[in-house]
Length: 100
Image 1 (cartoon, rainbow, N blue to C red):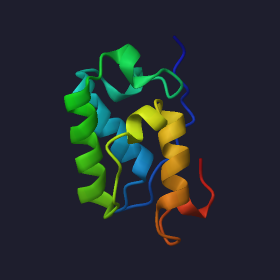
Image 2: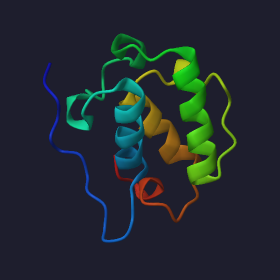
Image 3: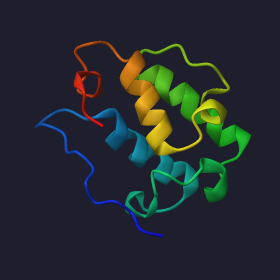
């Protein structure tokens, strides 16, 4: 497995949604963030429905989004989920400004 090293970095004092996402996934999947390939489905890392629903709740709390409980089944990889988040986050957020 090759893990891309071209993840964008946050400006001082800010956290991009995908950086936050890697940190949360690291907790739920019990693995280092740098070992999570953005193209591998969450299920292949062993994410179960309890962890998926917990992550949905975390997204709601952190970003003020209303998240459907099927979000991680509709967007089963980091790449897909970050792409989706970039379309639903407010216009002023870093990902909504065209960053991958």
